[in-house]
Length: 318
Image 1 (tube, rainbow, N blue to C red):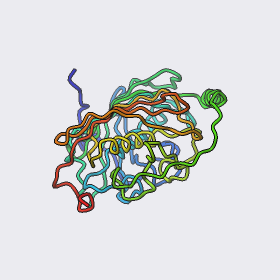
Image 2 (image 1 turned 135 degrees about the horizontal axis):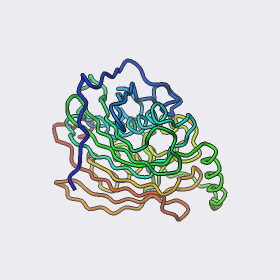
Image 3 (image 1 turned 60 degrees about the vertical axis):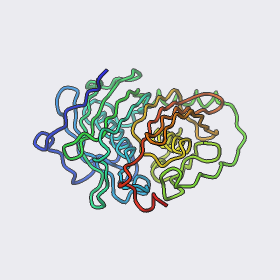
Image 4 (image 1 turned 90 degrees about the vertical axis):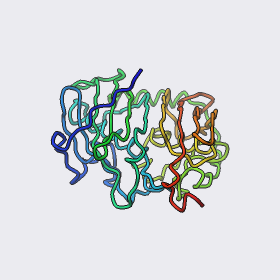
């Protein structure tokens, strides 16, 4: 089935500003530097625009060894934009818990992500959702989004999730935790070397040992504020890093398709299993699953491709 890209907004129709970020509470963030949504606007029935920007010196998303911006940074900005839209236009009160159930992301044009060294990763996202005005809880709603950088479509993200009233979410999570098995404390494995997962800083490495997800509750980005579960962005980064380790090459992310069937608890080991279909000339397709307490709680298929050779920095060659 041919995919449909949302029409890119023009400068005239967007009218959005990059002067400041939206309030932290609308993006469910604690720190100003972790808010990536600058502005939003309604664009028609069920369609909205958001201006996003990633800080050039961000401790996580700027930690890379290639001359390309990180597409997962854009995915995180789009996730925040969906949260902002829910509060600003769709009647979801602050405090609403949002749970992502499924997501696909595809990089449409890697050249739009090239880092010139002067400009941040920024663009306009056109988002379409079937969540109408007024709170609609406990039913899955879908969305699709296209990020335009300049005049080119850079990235598409599609998915669906559920909104929980705060009291319902609290009751649900209390019941879940009550039924988790007791686990003896174990030491976390050492992280893999940063260059194996495209990082410079070992603090941003989130897989270790025999592909176990590392959960550092002091990480300034993944744990910008307290959680009662492992946050989704950390799980996505874990999938990406596990895929890079499994592939054994410093590939670029071309696309992913993830489903989340359970919450990952903070106090039990989380392990990846994987299957790799690789070709050194074309990249690799990796199917991964994440399990905890003997139960599979998430799955992800990741497509990796080689970077253009001229796009590598000198550090990436070493």
